[in-house]
Amino acid sequence: MSIQLSRRNLLKASGIALGARAFPLLPAFSETPASTLTAGPAPLVRLSFNENPFGPSPRVAEAIHGELTHLNRYADESAAQQLAEQIAAHELLPVEQVVLGEILGLLGTVFASEGGPGSEFLYSTPGYLALIDAAARLGGVGVPVPLNAHYENDLAALSQNITPMTRAIYLVNPHNPTGTVSDNRAFKEFLGASSQHAVAIVDEAYLEYTEDFNERSAVSLVRQGANVAVFRTFDKIHGLAGLPIGYVLAPRALADALRKQGAGDAEALGRLNIVAAAAALSDTEQVVHTRAAIARERAKWQIVLNDLKLPHTDSQTNFIFFDAGLPQATLAAAFRAQGVDIGRAHPPYINWARITIGLPEENLRAQNALRQALR
Image (cartoon, rainbow, N blue to C red):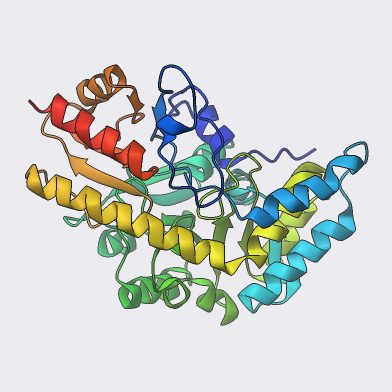
């Protein structure tokens, strides 16, 4: 029996997630200050999980409402197939190359099983480790490669670490936690060359926050038949963290292997998750509005960081990453005292903090907390 875990559950399973109290669900595209939405003491502002504060498309709520009278029924395989076909049309790929699910962990399991104990998995560190952790449980060996001086995936160093034992190369672009995007031409050249030695898996969870998303996406290499797989999620810019669902675009052989392991099964995906994803994908305006709103707030954050003379990366995502000049744990405690949760540290950058971009009022609150902490 295969088990499909969400990105968040995989993160918790690896022992690196920081718990936080729930933050109220907000209307789609709402820029209403959070303090006006609740009575009594202001709630804890959670800026630690890179959630989309503006919420999903209104179409999502409509689609979910239409399913509420069918919750006594298991998810329909035909609905999952329709979603896969919708994604295939969106991505300009045959539906056979689309596999539904939050299956980074399953990818690690499949490759580690086939490669056997000692098979190597390259990744940038610090980074998101769901795939690496899953492979390690079956004897796979993670090979961490530090970021370059610009806090980006170090493509040259990654190339030098490819060996006959390399089973997969796993990269997040834009990178998490730094938010940096690799140079498009260099990244595509690296993927083309490295995938001749081992499958290259690109996690594009945050790529839709970039203006030139379509140009940057590695799906172009999948279309060309390269040994490249691309992971996407509806959890981030589409605002479906509460109904987690994603998909992989992969070579046909890999897609078939994943399906044999149970990936894409409608029952595992969930009835509401399927209809929510279909509704979200149909609303391109929601993505445009969210991208623009996040960009505006990110620019404000960068002004604050520059005013405070704090080094920071050129993040292109819905979070910022900066050197606070003091241990992240100390900074996080100071933020907590101000009612803001910024989550955990990302070693070896022990003085650096990653903060999710929230609603305008939440960002102001976090920026004031930062100023207080640095006094």
